[in-house]
Amino acid sequence: IGYGRLGEVVVKELIETGAKVCIVESDPELVQRLERDSPHVILLGDGAEDSVLRRAGIERARGLAVTAAPVAQAIFVTLSARQLNPAIPILTRVDSDESSVKARRAGATAVVSPHIMGGWRMAHGLARPHTTNFLDLATLAEHDDIMLDEVEVDVDSKWVGRTLGEMQVAREQGVLVVAIRRASGEMEVTPSAATPLHACDILIVVGKPENVNGFNTVIRKG
Image (cartoon, rainbow, N blue to C red; front, side, top):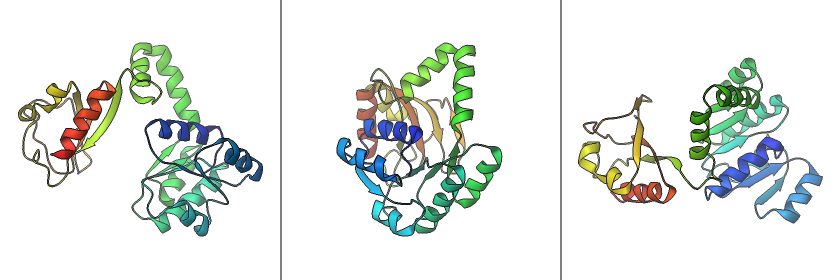
């Protein structure tokens, strides 16, 4: 929702991952340009209106990025979207601690402040340049050398109850499991070979894109 500078980056990164994107924008001139130049689904309208959100597919969408400005509008959009889809992940743009609290109260799953994130990136780029470069390589879709991804262990997966060591899949596929997010929300960092897997665990893995995709396929088939 909102195709300013931030929204443009969000769309670019999502498209690089293979996601299908619908853009909702209230500026008629911008929508006209996008309809002429962009292959994505473009809707003209106010993202806070239920009818517009339904046309965009809010009830079946995998996620929502609210990048609209000003922040008050973004919070209102978040509230409207949450009412229509109580389960959808919503990431909302904010500009202060106060707006962050309000956005979460409105139903945001997570909030993003471009100013804070930009400051963090610059500071770490100076203090930890190699670490920051690695994160850029692993998280930006435009890089094809390394990939950081998440893989969920399904409830009926044969891997439930088995350990990472027993799986052998990570080693065979050439990926590294760097963390596990349990269903409780607990994050287990650098799990050992003796770490058991549970239903709905999220495995955070890193490796070459082709290896990570292969690992993902094997786990989901399991």
